Length: 532
Image (cartoon, rainbow, N blue to C red; front, side):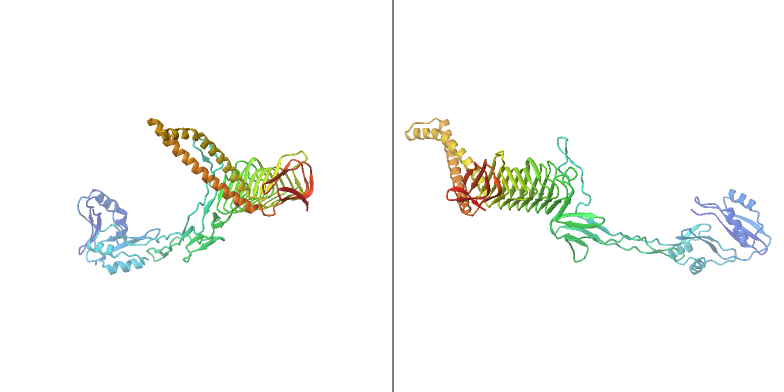
């Protein structure tokens, strides 16, 4: 494909313009372009209409006289057009006239420079043009280079930065508001985030030589709070403690204290590797499990709290008969009502009402009220309160001097032993009968032989299990005897009312009359009251 073009031809006394038609679908000569060229070369009075008629109809080269004089020879030339964005310089070449000189590569480059093209000249495009000159054709001889974008810095987080607080849908189609994913739990040494630093872009240029800066890249830094370690290359951060991670306004925090307003449908049940602090209340049906301490600054309803450490409840607990506290350490509560409490340390409250309390340390009930009314309190240490029982004779049991967990275990084993003994007794008659028949030489039927083997094996298994449980009970009793010698006592500053059951190191008494300002101790085989 080749565009149509024109060329000035001269004789000694005349000037002509030769018109060359396009080839293989090229564009025809543009009349306006031809007119402007002729005017620039000193031929302003050309009949443009006549030229257009020839161009529109031409199929071969046409030579049209334009003057009765010889023109001035014109060298090969070109027009330069710089794009609006200055990223390309497009040239349009015109052939030399008769006697005119052809352009060379240096000629083209110097002309481009004069036209303001200072950079990006395409030497290959110039060489290609010179090797096969095409006139009246747009040829790009210079190109700018766009700036190369860099890469923004990126921080990849390895914990849930957007916790899903949507309730879980159960298999039966109901909604479980108790199981929500509100905590991003992390362990010590867990990677929290990695920074991939920004990569600067490369500047570009346009054909006039202006530098084109690359787009700004986003720069980031790792922002973090305490309990976080930074890697040596300063590109990664790691948790320094067991706890939970959160992202707040681009900053990573790790805390070993998980703090919530309330434990309810907005949080679901909480299971956490560190300490838990509830600023408000723990609602009925919800649970907290913590590897550290649990602090509740409001009240606890019929809920479950399990802590490896201490449990503190600022405004008390009304467990409604089912609420449970299981602490590896101490339990401190404003009051405990209708609650089930197990503590690996001491228990301290201003009042305990109708609750089951098992503690390894002392149980102290003091304060404005300081009463224990109803329920069962057990500890191998001492119990002290202002008031024990009530004037109405509410059943209240206090037990000290033996480890309550050992006592419960012994009671459970004794129940199992009783069941085993009964099963052994039930199996013995049939076993004795069949054994007697075998010893007398009586021939047993096949099904009798099979039954004898089965019952013999079961009998041996039950006897072995019975022996093991009896041995375990004996060991536990020895352990209980070892603790029963400690000076456990029950102190009452005010009154202990009738109906209260007092047990000290397995010696029990039930009060039949009020006791005021006294200390219950074990002396010999009796429980006695002494002054404080």
